[in-house]
Amino acid sequence: MHEIAIPAELLTPERIDAFFENLQKKGRRDSTIHEYRRHLQQLFDELPADKRLDEKVLHAWKKRLCENSASFRTVNVKLAAVNSYLRYIGRRDLQLQPLPVPQDDARPELTRAEYLRLLQMAKWRGDERLYMLIKVFVSTGLFLRDLPNLTVEAVQSGQLAIDNGSVVRIPGRLQKDLLEYARRNGIPAGALFLTRTGRQLDRVSIAKSIKRLCRDARVPEKKATLLCLRKLHRSTYADIQANLQNFVELAYDQLMEQEEQTVGWSTAG
Image (tube, one colour):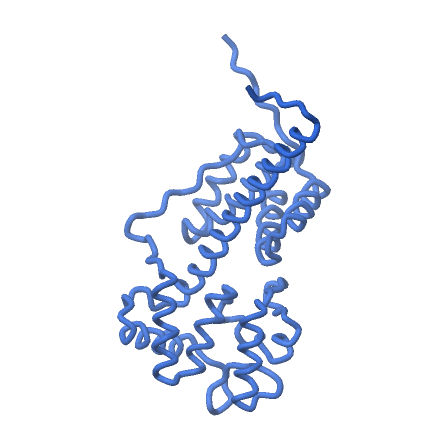
């Protein structure tokens, strides 16, 4: 008995553009779209001349990623981009399994309750700059390298351009708080977070401040990292998206039910 050959899929720049237009319509973040485009372009560049995707080609590409990438996370981010495209074109059969997370490499998760305790402790200590920094990292998922771009002008516009060419939206509530912070601290323009001598904040000093704050707020010190703050942003955003999708599906079901009642014909029962 012969095995049925699974047809290959042609990957073209036009199809890639259509995929990202679809992501934009769905409201995906610019940073996610930029990252996915970079990974899909990498796959496109490494494909054979016929630019066709099939099981053999994709598994060979995954193998090269595993051999050349510094960490399993890097591999999984690239696989997620390709799997998202394959889902879009209806080829789930070609999707690649992500690498398992090593047990000893699992990152601790900061809870919303612990996040609020950090804010409360920073406020109690009168450390307004640290209070605002924690809100920024959790509310936007910003990387430390992009902090110098967080200027009074960017906050006023409600958008922050980051180094990878993407734009991060500043939530309205955070925008108001940051402008109040600038006003209270006499910052009419330019970067919001600088040292007393006007220099950029460095990773070591921020990490030490967060570590002390965690200790005082009775939050495990292993969670005293910028990565944990950004991870809370991602998980919160994902939870909101999931809940929103459930709401959309429920609303659509209710709409269909109302239409059946209006028409007077139902296939149920």
